Image (cartoon, rainbow, N blue to C red):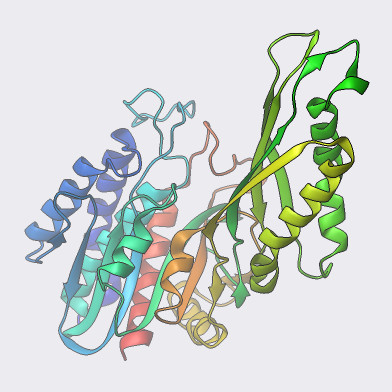
Amino acid sequence: MLDTAHVVERVLPTVVEVRRAIHRHPELSKQEFATTDLIATHLIEGRLTPRLRTPKTGLSVDVGTEGPLVVFRADLDALPITESAGLSFASDQTGVMHACGHDAHTAITLGLALAWAEIGDGRRVRFLFQPSEEVFPGGADELVAEGLVKGATAIVAFHVDPHLRTGYVGAKPGAITSSADRFSILLEGPGGHTARPHETVDVIHAAGHVIANLSGIVDRLLDARAPLALTFGQVHGGTADNVIPTSVVMSGTVRTPDHDTWERAPELIRKVATELAAPFGAAVEIRYNRGLPPVVNDAELVARLMPAIERALGPHTVTDTYISMGGEDFALYLPETPGALFRLGCAADPAQTNDLHSASFMLDEAALEVGLKAGLEILKELTG
């Protein structure tokens, strides 16, 4: 087997170049055509054979043919945000930006594929370049349906973390991200004059009661050790100051890292919202859209890979990490195979950083080399 350090040194310039190119030319979910072509071109130049999903975006590539199948996943899409970070390779697409680090995930995974072709000794790894992580339904469910993780013994991914110093990796057995569901509540009545609310159904007042009380009551019906974040994001109703409208619609998200709470949430929200609106006489229509389950890392897999990461990066470079209330469609792979999502530190100074999904988000490019080193050691461990 060739020396890993020399292979990383040789591959790293390509990884940096590709990350900057993807950052400069970001593409939204389901539109990652140029990004897909760029990755495919580099894989072909590396004498690999990518499997394109034409006419869809995204691709996969198998490196090696021997032993159990291990999968490493990246995501391709950008966000509808106008960049303000001031980078020399800033987005050239107004209103589109890589504000979640998917450019880094993709470039690192490309580097891993190219490096594994040299040092993998024929051991089989499938690299997934998944489109559409930022929307639902997105790319993960499509790749699962296409059988791209069928028969795999493990799946692994990195997600950059601007709150963790570069050179460190955050690891957590069990839940590491939360579910992400959406709901809407429609209240209806006959409408009327604001001078006589007692003669009609004041849906505005009823909506305020629901907004103010729904989350608190649902919380009291759930185990406090399994948090749930129910947040309204939109409220629409009314067309004039002196008219009680015939309808108000409220919508938002529901998030929890606990599978049991995730299962119970729709029924509880429907029941409580209906009971809150009932005293006002409003008709209630509730729509609840299942999104993503929590990402629950396989505890044995995390425990096995933590020493491998420290072999690559040095002692004490793996640290405990937090449960995010955000969603991640990596969760959709986990019913198929044990998996682990790790947080890759990308902050030169965690005290002076901008969060993911921020217009001013930027990462420390030194994290690219860290991801290569850690990723290769992970693959060695899983295929050894």
